[in-house]
Structures are given as C-alpha cells and as structure tokens.
Length: 460
Image 1: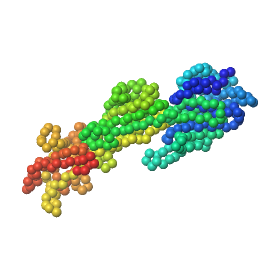
Image 2: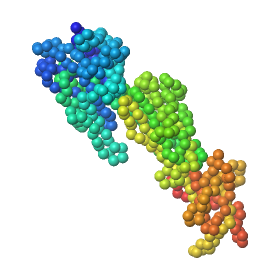
Image 3: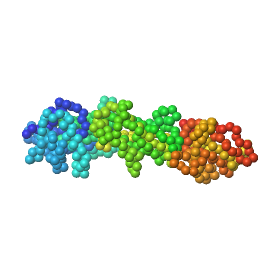
Image 4: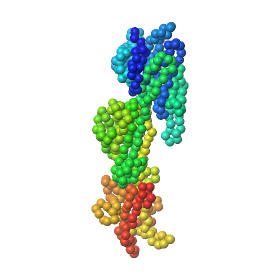
C-alpha cells in the first residue's frame, strides 16, 4: 500500500507554494512513537481572524514505527473521504478504511483542491465535526480593547522584532490536520516530526472609502451637499493573495438614499457586472444598504491590484442638519469569516437663520417682511430656490426646508412671523443672496441683497 504521507510530502516538496483552501499538516513522530502528543504552529496570524485545526486522519504504526497507516478520525470524515466527489479524485479508501493518495505525481493544485473541499465540508458540518483547537484575537475598532476566543490548547505569541505573531495548538493526537483560516487558507505538509509548523501567507485585504466634494471635484472623508442633491462615493479594495468570498458592504445613514452602482474599475478599466465578475445585491430590509459580491475565480486573479467601486446616493428629507452629519460606512467581508475595519465618510448639510427687526440695542421683531433666497445676484431662471414650509418650532421660528423634485406646495418667499425669525435648512456650502422682496408696512425695503456665505465647516 502506498503511504499517503510519503506521497503527499513528495508533492509539496516539489512545489512548496502558497495555496488557497485549507492547510494539511502532520503531527506524526517516527522517532518517539505515535503515542506522544503533537502540535501545529501557525505563524503570521492576523488580528480579527479565526483559525481552526481539525484532525482528519488518525495515525497507526507498527511497533518499530517504520510504517504508518492512516484512517479517518471520525465517521464524518470517513463519509467525506468515501463520498465527496472532489476527495474521490485524489484519495482511495480501502475496505479496511485505510487512506492512500491516488497519484504521488499530482500537482500541488490537486492538493489544494482536496484541502478546499475538506475545509468546506468541515464548515458545512460544523455541528458534527468538532475542531481540535481554535483561536481568534479580536481588536475593537473604537477602544482598541483586545479579546481572545480560544480553545484550551491554543496559545498566542505576539510578534517581536524577529518573528511574526503566531498561535500554537498543542496536545494533538498524532495524524493529519486541516487548518482553516479566515484569510483564505493554505496547504502545507511537513515531515513526521511532532511539531508541525506553517505560515499564513495570505494577506488581509484593505479598503479605502471616499466621497466627492461637488464644489471642486476632490475626493476625501467628508463633503457638503444640499437636500435633493446626488453624492458620489468610491471605495477602493486592495486585493490580496488568497482572495475569496469578497463581499463589499455599504451602510448609509437615514439621510442618504442609495441610488446606483455607477461603475466598477480595475486599473482604470471598467468591469461589467456578471456572475463571473461582480453582482449587486440590494438588501433594503437588512442591516446593509447594499452588498457587492465578487466571484471567487475573478478576485483570485487580482492579487496586488485594486478594485474601485463607484456609486451614488441622494441626500433626502431625513438628512441631519449640521451636527454629526450623515455618515456612510463601508467594510469588506472576506475568507470564511473575515471582516475589514469599517471606513466612513460624512456628508454635511447646512442651515442659517434670519431675524428681521428694528431698533438699536433693543431689537423689536418685524412681522410681514418678505424674502427670497437665490444662488445668483442677478435674477436668472432657476436661481431662486424653492422651499417647503414646515411647522414653526416651540420658539415661534418658522421652518423652511429646501424642496426636492417630488415636493408639492413649494414656496419661494418667506414672510416673517411675529418673532421676526425664520430658519432655512437643507443647504450646501456656498454663496447665497437673501433679498427682501417686500417690507413691512411703514418701513422701507432693503435696497441691496444680503450676501450669505456658508463655508465647509458650516460657518455662516
């Protein structure tokens, strides 16, 4: 019988390449015998990623520890080895349940496919297949607080100047192990020493979200816009080795209404949506505004490149005025359970108030003055802004919201109430002209328009 260990070790010795899917390691020990426990160390581990180690095969040896045989560790793994179509391409299970590799000349991609199928099976049957160890170190984005979720046999060692962070799973029965990580995963085979080690060479993808300021076309972390205006966003994804299960999520606040994906580009070239590239998945009733799912085969070939997703939203009537603004958060899911940190932009909408009065230090409010607001000093078509009059606030100040395309009963003039005050909101940063169109009885109308400038910090 051809020994599975020797056959597969020969494959990896010839290739020794980073692979996606899962990681197979041996904790067998020919010198000390199969009764001694083994360990698997995974180096270059990443924060916020989960690592699981599964025993797929148990080890049997003769009394001299010169020959080794392998059997499925559990009935679930036995079922996988005997029935899974992918597994059947690469292994053989004899009538006594012993496992051999079909062809020692298989390329490393075949070992990769076998490991991918095994990892998928473990995830699918998570209630029946128990990991021999697990570890995840989570760092909170806001507080930087660290929490650990780990099995008793998992020990984390922080990175130093001479080594990367790593986690060691100890007290493992000797045999074959599949190690899955949320960064994608890898396949690595070692010698028959009890201390097997491997490196997670897959990298964590990054995202960068920006919003465009309409006044100068610049991209950044914040912008200003008026109610009813379209806001343009872009999120850049830096694809890393081992890319799979890439899903871009976007969550817009209540004041922003998602409009559409405008385009997706890779190195400046537009990529059309399809099942083979990317697809938009809107989730109006969920926690996300929308999700863009990328095909595994597509992103697998983009390592080192950047995907740029351009999309737009409309500032709606529920927009927050000034204050904390209207945030829009984006993050990327990847691997089996990985998530990047959230990146955020903020869209600000502004306001200003008017007080019409007479007198010196003792200001007497004037009722009945009429005003209009324009974006041009000269009266050109479309320059006079339309508003919707809302209920006055508790202080008797009239409220006017900038109108949107679907609003009815809009007004272009504001008449001062008994308090002499009204508030105009829903405005972009910029220059406006407030013109008195009619004075109260017994008073002269202002001869010049009042220039109102709102800067990008909301200062009037």
